[in-house]
Length: 490
Ligand code: GLU
Image (tube, rainbow, N blue to C red; front, side):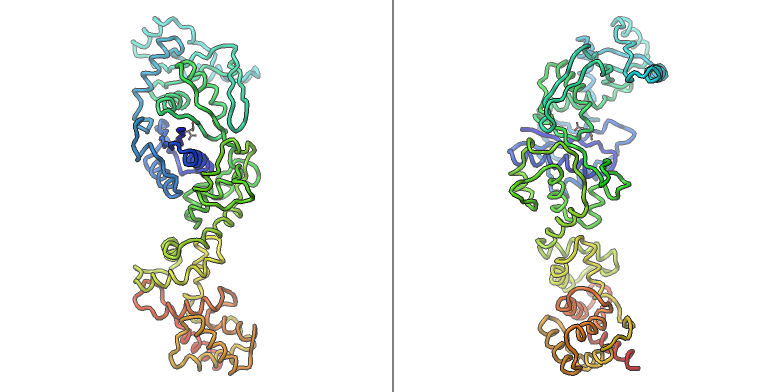
């Protein structure tokens, strides 16, 4: 089995295309096949090297490593279409010699006028066939005189083209609705439908898995396979990924590219797992599974042909799961850019600060959807001591008691130390439960809400004890308590 993902490098990798890449990858990995990456860069105006690089990076970030293709080599290269142009020209020459293709000299204006006339007559627009029966000698002479020409395929008349799509079942098209398509433009650049057939044949692709936006191209491609005497691969057209309003997922729905979801703080394994669930199910009422297990269970036959809706809440649910599983070292590395963006990390991190992140972040990750929310959780650490929110009941007493208990330099570096202190503040004030812990929270964290005190209080004092850490300044619990006591009792 040989499958391929064939992006056009004209922008960022859309999650719909990422899902196409993933389904190819799952099939190849699960069945011991080969996953090929081919870059379809024949749209010279819109293709860029930056976009190609971004797509490669995004695929690697998702863990969808390819076995053959751009950046990986292989026996059937080159894998970038602009490096295969001679091959397409040779194939076009062959079709012309066999009268399965012909030169067309129609100008853009002629074609445009024909199309308008057809539309006015309520006919489906298609090439009128003006040059279809031009004697080859005349075509050769006009070519020799330098007249620009495209190459078109001679589509057989009165035929039905049928194929059994692995996802959608039997699909049929009548050739009478297909105008002779352009195979090679006058500048020598092949059309998508032409290049894709030659490449899939030469790269020995056995299964073409792509978005259903290509389904109307498939009969044209099948006719080209026939014209060359090649056996077509199996085709599977995946339904498109829709927004909540059932229109194809686009910018107006919000984030659409892998890059944007990555920047929003989703983990690659969460995105991969979630995308696999759009239009497919691993079965056994299980949804959250690692990629290798998804691959083991993946069957193209079980992919649904109905459109899948992209549900960011469900992606967030998967992300919560993987954040909890994330190894502490990796979590710290993933979180760092987000903390930096929020001014919580300001310089190169010291070993102590690294260790602090590794220790503190897993506790915080248990209650967030996305990486930037770790910075929300850490706000309590970096908030400078300020005026407590309001002078609520209990605040002055608790501030006084806390300040007195911490005066001697006690550092609340773990849960037990904090609990011991809380017990003594309780004894001093006679307050308990919420009446005790709410004022403590306000005084020590500067906010009425936030992570559990057992977690955040030690995080504060541990961070406050670090020097030249690369973290933003952190006031100790002692400083916070002293500040509040002064303010409230003045
Ligand atoms: N370059 C095409 C695209 O990005 C590939 C279609 C195909 O897989 O055949 O849509």
